[in-house]
Image (cartoon, rainbow, N blue to C red; front, side, top):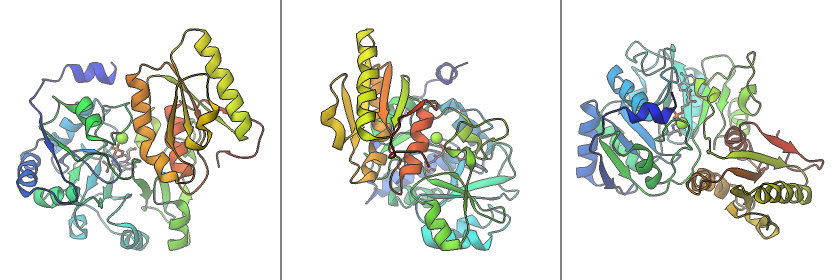
Length: 370
Ligand code: TXA
Ligand code: MG
């Protein structure tokens, strides 16, 4: 059954939707939201990366509700969100030295660490794994909520399974109204891509999902670090990704999407040709490009995702653009590649998944997937 079909059979509930100032959160709102979490209910809230769909991570039945509300397979483990380092004790068997240094450098912030789990964390939260993912968000409102709840908050991205992660309050409302007790609408999130996930249970830290915290930063800090090879390639049976969620076709727009990469002039030529061909067949077509090349596209309506001069702008707007294409019922999307810079790996990881690994490589040098 499709995720949407699954969700359609859950009983409709009244969702309270409240405006939320993440920088200076209203204490009454925090108190009410925290009470819902403590009672086993669900609250969607902003973080600095994307919105999260929160429940009490130590209650099996709250985790079950999260999977049901998202229409998400229950073998896909949840991240526990904590407000301070003391909250980590009790959730994990040990904190390896490398993890301690990563926490000092990057917490609070967009970094999730995988530890051996303690008995306090139910298997319903970890999708049956003996490890647990933990993150301390830097978003003030998110931390105030977690602190007030007094429990680690299990929170996947607050989208229906298979939809792009929500980066604005209206995305969460569209996906989850009627499925959760409360939605805190804090406007647009600052980063727009999910956290970097690093497995610190082995001898070498391994990135399972790329994000703002990069492999280079981890190697500089620890002198070691690897990237899960399944990150940019289509995972084969032998190359099963270690983050169970990475094997699903996440971040997927409804359109068939193709990425064209290589020499810029050649990319523009190919996208124009492909888009023009589909337009002539009477299809609804969209082009996704950087501001720098915007003026070169005429074959189909074009969305500017951001500027190559500030790659964070591309990260911030990517999911919003994909959602807009869906709303416009776009059938075919042709996108430029964005593999340069420090965020290139994270952006391309999401983009190639959204495209179902359909990439056309033109002859030139630039824009290659590393
Ligand atoms: O930025 C983020 O991380 C956002 C915000 C809300 O904090 N959360 C988020 O959660 O992206 P979610 O559930 O959409 O993605 C969690 C990813 C999945 O790919 C899951 O498989 C992986 O983390 N994961 C969770 N626990 C794991 C574990 N014990 N071992 C390996 N991967 C794990
Ligand atoms: Mg997600």
